[in-house]
Length: 96
Image (cartoon, rainbow, N blue to C red):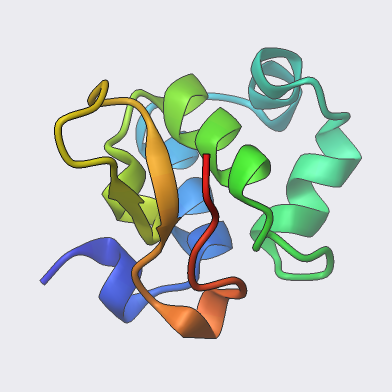
């Protein structure tokens, strides 16, 4: 079972960041957010359903987008995404 099916994207981000020994400030620097905003996203206090936000965090953490509930584009670049696999995270599909 993938992390996206058992945890929210924020929980996956927090667990991955801590496992990698990364600080909130470092992840914020890599994603363009403040440490406080990263913390709010991890704790679910700010919505993490925006595709661009999920893409930024997956890339910064070096994890597959699928870990955050995103689906890869078939036949496209492996880092590209089109939508969410789990509709409880927000939008179900976005055209690129």
